[in-house]
Image 1 (cartoon, one colour):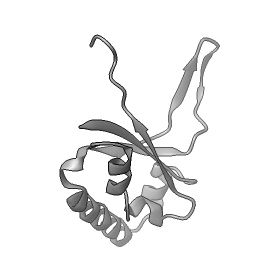
Image 2 (image 1 turned 90 degrees about the vertical axis):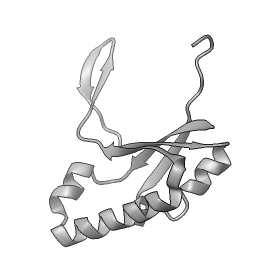
Image 3 (image 1 turned 135 degrees about the vertical axis):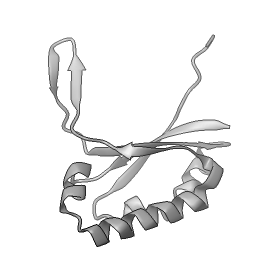
Amino acid sequence: MTKFVVLYNAPQSAQSQMAESSPEAAQEGMKAWMEWATRAGDGIVDMGNPLGAGKEVTTAGTTDTNTQVGGYGILQADDMDGALALLEGHPHLMMPGASIQVYEALDIPGM
């Protein structure tokens, strides 16, 4: 099985979404995520987490990030098509402007 890193993108930060969500809306959101997790089953290696504010480190120093990455997860599948199939009907995509990026985790030679 190949591992895939999944990045959840949204125009609103995960912190803002959680702060603005009513308890009822948060419960409905978690229900949708758990239903997806049940469908994805063993394809989920790590459900991941929402991400807070980040920093970018370069040789010039450290700055605040300006991406829309709001969370991550790790899936496993035979190939990219299999990983994409696991994401069909994903609740993250119900949010206006949301997207999901999927990257194959490559093996490091000799490790």
